[in-house]
Image (tube, rainbow, N blue to C red; front, side, top):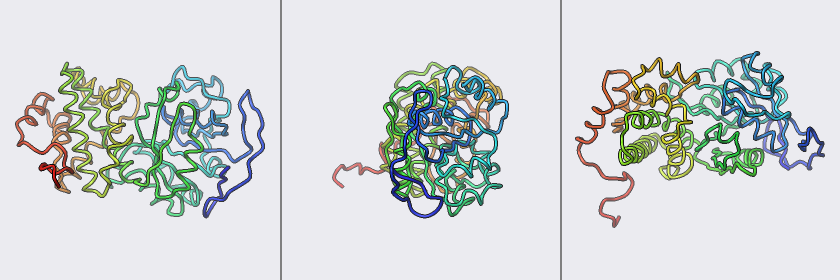
Length: 366
């Protein structure tokens, strides 16, 4: 079994003796932390517990933590899902970081920096794996880049893919990608999370995987609107495939590998987020298509919809980089400039014809 040291490279450790708790076999290894008690953080905590790990699920809300301790359920985010005994809901972040070497970070993008900066020294040498699919508004930094900035001595990875939290919690067959230049970190995360219904693939393109997870949220809002307005299957397919072309074009401009977007963190995540009513960003788009204001749509959701925040910074960044992103520009016009989805699609259809796939020669011979 792989053991974690506080600093330095991963060391091979002998297998830990097993004990049994409520019918589950547990090891005496150090616990694993999940920072953030939203739907995805809670689902990942349960996955880790199912695989025999003790888990510290840290959250800021003491009442939410108490509800989990007493009722073994997170009623706000995953109502009806029983949380395993090996998941301990806690509110002391300092103690959590001191106890754990592997930390999954599931904080909202708007809160990640403010929550972790006061604990920067305690993050040194830790394995930090971001679960958050977002971009910081004023810096255009991805979550793993913020983690690197806060804790330059930590080992950083990201987890992304077509991963709806409730389906994971209900044991629907699911696959994800852990991405890092650190192969040992990828292996450690695979061993921690890989189970009978959850498969973990690895990638070295951390930037591409993380950017795919952030960008697809924008297009899920458009897809939800299209469904609410009764647009056809052809239209939805066009929107999804043009979204894939658009987000890949932007990502490659920023230095990502285009092949990453043919995998789970690209087209896989885009499909599920743009087609499932369980997707938070899809729900916001659907509410907008029903005629609700953006404020009311977000209020109805009751959770963070990262796509709204990402849209603002993405439009500005695309303009700065000179990347053609008509869907991003169109959605921005709908949410903040008073346009309708019908107007945006009409404008898209009148645009100058382009090649289908940017990275394939139209001649077919070179």
